[in-house]
Image (cartoon, rainbow, N blue to C red):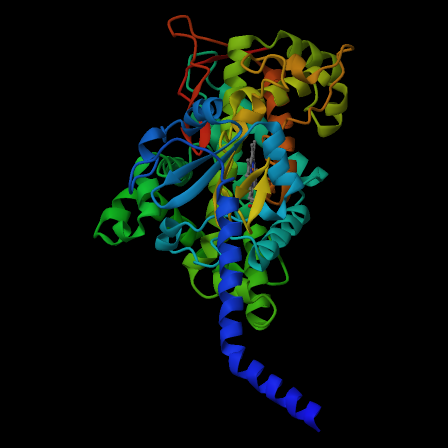
Length: 513
Ligand code: HEM
């Protein structure tokens, strides 16, 4: 009985001290987390000192950010940090570090930052469309839908190959109509690649001199330019500035105009839409929306972002169209430019041997054309089409190359530093197709060839892009020899930057072979 009493009194005293015990345990746990966090932060990547409020904004050339990053890379190593106002940013450089991030730790680096400027333009906050969508169910659903629909409309198949070959034929006719006189090829090339994406998306191609088409192409081009420079970064990081009357209208006028144009096309599509006859990507998209709208519980995020208003519909379409066309446009304009500067005799010889002059190139020819294939790959390295990739964000706290990177840190994968990584490429700063040829002149794949990025967010249009690159490239060089007009300077090989790297305007003569 005495023992029982003792037991009860001990239990009661413990019970009384429980709050103290609980408090001590919580304090201990918090201290432990604090010390652990401090230790982790001590392993945060190094970076240049930053100014209060502005951070490192004044140290970056926003018209050539990859060049600024390359300089900082030399000083601070492959993984360094920057401060954009109050956002933490880490720049990852070189093949090894980029591969570690995007492939080895694929999910940790798969998120995208939130862009207030796009929300202001009318994109949905939770899912701003496939390219800029946050990592999660809405992104997964959109990616699956886009891939599946692109395949249904011929990506990787003969039907799309024929369509691209036909467009390449139209481009060659437009070039030959210049009858060897000097002209700027950029606008024609832009129209040709735009047509491939537009026919996939809207089911129609335009004549090159169609006024509506000219305006559409011009507006998309200007929209890309609106994304570069200091001001858009400032508006993104200090979003209350977007509330100042007329500021967003002025800064993003072309993006707004492009949305209105697509609005009109979508409206027309809706009027003629027939669920039993899906003509193009937009029809498939409208069908998906109807399906999703009827099954609210299925894809909650997609419903949020896609159903009801036309502006929300564009979340998927607008970035998809203009980013994709501009990447292809940039490649092809560099293609003409580099053939011009570095000569194309060996490609001509290979085309004559494998394809001849009487039929159009097709994708089966690629296996027998190692030199042309090597040149196409080298143009992508040398042209550096998407030098800083698209921004990623860490999905959780993670480690990279021994550094601690907290959740929600903006990550820039400096693809330029991968395509010009001195530890992987023999002559990274020269146009050198031998990077992709072995000693017997056969084509070899190189692991540091990542123009389409890697991992979860790898370019969705890679297959389509590769098909277009090969068919346009071989069709143009089958028909023409390019030369610089006598009174013109040789074109500049470097380009201007607006997320994507474009060549400066240049003049050529396309001489029929
Ligand atoms: C030469 C042509 C092209 C190049 C060099 C290129 C390159 C890239 C790069 C570097 C990214 C960023 C990947 C990342 O975030 O890590 C990307 C994303 C993307 N690209 Fe391309 N691209 C090209 C053409 C295309 C085409 C033709 C399409 C459309 C069919 C397309 C659709 C996309 C989409 C939808 C994404 C976003 C993927 C996602 O976030 O899940 N691209 N591309």
